[in-house]
Image (cartoon, helix red, strand yellow):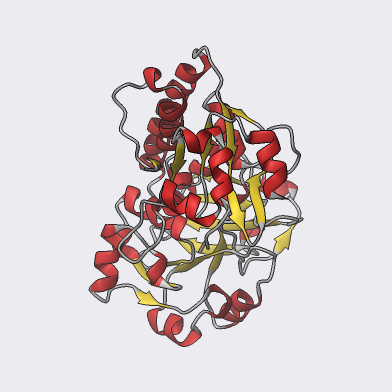
Amino acid sequence: MRHYFILLLFILGLTQCKNTDRPESLIATKKNSIQHAKGFSIEKHKGYSVVKVSNAYPGATAFYTYVLHKKGASIPDSLKQFTAIEVPIKKVIVTSTTHIPALETLGVENTLVGFPSTRYISSEKTRTLIDAGKVRDLGSNQGLNTEVILDLQPDVIVGFSVDGDVKTYKNLEKSGQKIIFNGDWTEKTPLGKAEWIKFFGALYDLDEKADLLFAAIEKEYNSVLALAKNTKNQPTIVAGAIYEDQWFLPQGDSWAAYFLKEAHGNYLWKDSKGTGSLALSFESVLEKAQHADFWIGPGQFTSIQEILDNNPNYIHFKAVKNKNVYSFSTKKGATGGIIYYEQAQNRPDLVLKDLVKILHPDALPNHQLFFFEKLK
């Protein structure tokens, strides 16, 4: 699951299946159906699909291959070395809050039986299941409760690993559990992340439904993108916030910076290289962004007064003076989880709509902000 701060690291997982190069024997009879995502592919065959995860975590060098098959389907001998999962699955454990919206969108949230640290889940639907005792807490991602997992006997565990440490998953494999990676957070584009709903669609034999859901998101995203490109002005933007005496901002190749560009905004650090965060002094940010039109994503701050109470020098920013500060940290679930971290990568169309509404309000006059809120 994802912890907070600075548009941070999201999920990864580890799998029980063997690391492997791409053998020629796996040439598909049907072409890979994934268009935007770079970290996985789905090759459809009669009675089964071959799912390959190629970027499970930063620095991953191996493919992880899974055979998702219908009951009684004939699987070629060349594929029997890989993890085989009968679909549709009936019971699942997922390990990231960003997996929850995919389950709910597909209408299969009732199959969720366990999750690490359930307090981080914000969704009302899934919280209802948790409160009813239908989803058990598994402890932390670093120390999943093996005893509870063995008691639940899920069909599959959708796991992740930020740094490639997969000891917990290897131990679960030894206990007979089936592990499958989800590397959606490593995608570099909004539509690439969102397309991982097809990964879950394949697990539930709901490929067509997942395709239609993604197609609707893609269409809406591209429609808003076209509106943004036709806007005349390009407002300047500062992002991020102070944390332990340093101002952390998204780097120019990051997912957050990509969104700001798509919304036709001039993010002042757009030319910086990297997909993580820059750590700068308050003074250097003030020097460059004092006259920025907007401050978007001010970390933990939830009001202008809170910003000024933290450091009166924030008043020197034009965006603070004009109260053009927008945050997603104000919208939280019942247990305090920030909804943006859970849902944003699944609904990039809504994120882009919010940003276009903020930067170019006339382009979307009827849109009500979904993730972001203007601070007062």
